[in-house]
Every structure is written in C-alpha cells, then in structure tokens.
Length: 327
Length: 273
Image (cartoon, rainbow over all chains, first blue to last red; front, side, top):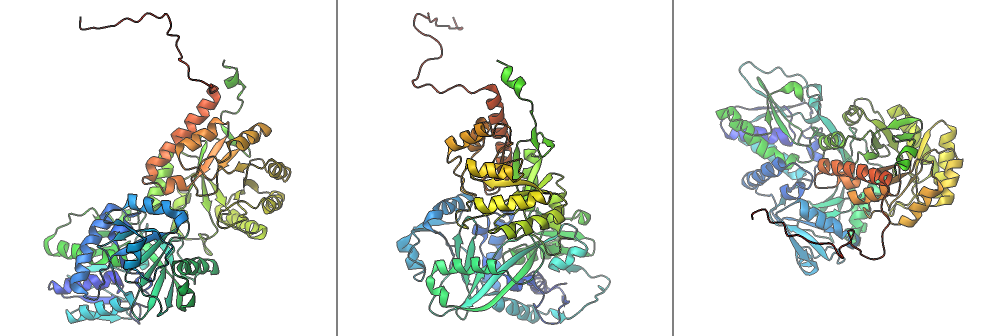
C-alpha cells in the first residue's frame, strides 16, 4: 500500500525475489500524493550523519549499492559542502560530526565545480555519495517494478487484503490513522532552470540559520531546498522562506539570479520521534515508515530488510520492531 | 562569613510571582530529533523551556504532534517571538502564542537586523508597553544598555534578558563590564542572560556575576551530544550560582603561594621504610 519511494522499492525487490505483488495506491495519478516527489533525492549517507542516527548511515551505504545495481542513471559524483568565509566554523563542525570526507581548497573546488562562486576557500568533499532526479527515478522504478511482475493499481480507495497475504503498509503520513507517534515535518523547495550553470554534484551551503542544498537535475534544472520545519501542513512556501532559499542560491553563484523558477512547493515528510525509520511487524501487516528526509536513501535498504524477513524470518536489525501500539 | 547567604532572600528563581528551582532555561529549536530534544530537557532537569512560534506555528495547531510532544514534557512554556522585525509582527505573534499555548508569558524579540539579530531597542520598548497593557508577562531580549533597561521596566517588564553576545554566535559574554554594571544597577530585578552563550564556562561566568538565570538553545541543540551538553550546562549554572553566593576571591596582581614556605620544615615521608 502506497506507491511512493518506499512502496516502489518494496514492490520491486519483492517481485524480483519471486513474490506475487500488488501495489495499491490511493491517488489516481501516480506520485501525485507522494511526499517523495518533493525530495531532493540526494543519496548522502555520510553528510546526513551530521544529525541522523548511525543506523541511517549504515542502511544508506547499503542503499547506494542497490541504486547502483537497479538504477544505472544514478550519478555518483559525490557531494560538496561549502560555507561562506565568516561561517567557516560550520565547515569544521560538519567535518567533526561526519566522516567519508576530505578538505579541498579553492583550486580543487574550482576543478570539481567550475561554476561555483570563487569566494569559497575551503570545502568538504564526500566522494562516495550520489544523487538521482526523483522525477525520472520514480516513474522508472514503477516501470521496473511492473516489468518484474508487479501489478500496480492507482486510485484505489478501499482495499481488503486477500486471506493468506501480507500487507506492507508504505503509506507515509497517511498511516497516522494507526501509528500514533508518526509526525509530519514540512520541507520547502524551489525548482529552477538555467543553462549557464552546471553542477556535477549536490552542493550544500552551511549557514547557522539558513542551511541550503542545490541538487543538479536533468535538463538544466536545479532543486533548491529544503527547510526542516516542525509543522504538518503543505501549503505553499512563504515569501520569507522563498527569499531565504533563493538568496542563498544566488550567493552560490550570482548567475542563479537569472534562472527561471519552475516550481515553488512544500511537502510533508513522515517521521518518528527520533527521525529514524522503522519496520513494524504486526501479524499480517508490516509497516515501513518514518523515512523522514531520507526516503531515497533509506527505501532500498528497508525493502531488502522486509524481503529477508518474509523469506527467512530474519529480523536482526535495530529498526525492526514488533510492538505496534508503541508507535 | 555566612551573612551573604542569609541575606539572599530568594534562593529560588522568582519570575512574575512563580518560583523555580532551576536557573537554566532551554530553547527547543534545531535539535537532531524531537526524541533527543526530550532527552536533553529531561536530563538537564530544567523547569522552563522556550518555544519559537514564528515559522513553526501552525495555522491549525490541533493534531500537530510536535506541539503535543512539547506540551507532554510538562515544563513551563515561554513562547518566543523569534525573528520578528516589527512591533506589529511581535505583538501579533505574542497573541498567537497566548492562544496556542494558553500562557501570557512571552519572550519578546524585536530584531533590528536579520544578520546580527541585534534587538531593536526602540521597537522592543514599544512592543513591551503594548503587551504589558494587554496583560502579558514580558521577558524582553535586550542589550546591556541601561537606558533601554529603565524604559523596559517603566513599560511594565519585571524581568530583563540582556544578551551575552548576538543570538547563535556562541561568543560568550562580550561585554562583562556592562553586564556587571547592569547587575549592580538593578539589584532587585531578575536578570537572565539570553543569547550568545557557547560553552558551559560562559554560563558559569554569567552566574558568577550574580545573574539570576541563563537562557540558551544553540549551544546545546547544535552540540555533538545535546543530551550530555544540556546536563553540562545545568551543572555549570549551578556551579556559577553557588560560587556567587560563596563569594569569589578577588584576583591578585601577582602570583603568591597560598602557604608560607619560608622557614617551613619539609619532611620526606617514606612509608616503605
């Protein structure tokens, strides 16, 4: 249930392992109600470890391999973390809280990203990270799942699971009707297009108050995101948020000032209180939820954990839990 | 020697007629997760937490699980008009906060400059006057300026919250002399150092100057281990307070041994013999 990033990976992995899979989605139009369509889709287990629990990094590194194997368009150019001179302390702080990086100087920054403003004296380079374009990846995953034998059904409001089947509930925030501790965390983003700037990899700009990232997508598009706001509604971004996002982009390269704004929108991500995903076993139903801002990073690894549990009963992971009423 | 302790008629923190054990106030923004926020608050034992409502306020607050989580911490809530740039914005935000959290306490921020986050003292006094007239209990985020402090008291504030350094800068007490002056100028007004604290030693230093409490957020929420850091600040605030009451020695202008050594016989004690 649920054809967002979690459900897509789940059905693909199960079908490839010989399961007969129906993928049920409430929205008539694919991805229209999926929070993953708002994602930046960075595959950055090392960077995310700044705030995420260690298990997120561990699963994320597994996911990198699964993306490499199943989605050849995945770009593995790493990621770059920069800060303005006066916020240099933020770089050292970020470096201290993460690993898998090395310091690069201005010369190497301009080798890696010639279009980045020359003002950055120092950056952190995370070589082993990747990114995808979610607007390409989501339809491609659906296609791959269907080719593997998944029957995908959209616009299904009511669903009674047949006997002797297992339901895997990947509904994201909609599962709040059952999962008491699941909360929504708002994220705002802009999609802009400009042909004069090329970036090979996601760039994170550290700032004490307005951290930002820019992810290069296909067709000269860039995703500028994304705030983390403890609020559950998905109404459009405010003027202030938009100014913060876009002026930070402008600071990365003033040429971004000439970009077209293609989209300004907000999504709400499902999260548990520790911002760490869980697989919750509840008899014939398994909940996979709480992927927070790590949907693309967590989904493949979670899908294989569920598959292994179904196939061999293996539940040797700290994120697999059984006391559904606690969640 | 004990006179000073006995003279201290208010061993507990008194804010607008409510008394508190704990002299550390913690903010609730930018923790790695709500779970870590809760552990940090619980581990530090603080009584009062601030909540910033400008951006995170909900148009429809019911069913917002983050707020439920904050409320379930069972602490005294001090809503904060964080980031407001005008008097009007600050007053509106305070009114929203009163409704949302069912309290007339408000930490009043009117920001002059979005970059440095300095308080706009003129706007602050004006907003404080309006809010006090409307039955709010105002905790103004101000500088160490004595003139502004007088005007805030005149506008009805019964607590003052001067900065140590700009918000989020972690630079500690930038103007110790001015903070000392403020303390001695307003001996009976509860004074809370708000903003700029980076290390527990900064918090201890402010308490050693005789400040009544410390309010901070970033130094805990952005540390490597907020749970541990919250406890460290709690200890530092306690240590600074105790030291203030115990009476700190005056610094001396030359090093001198604390025990006379001239003429003191030394014996080599060797228990093995």
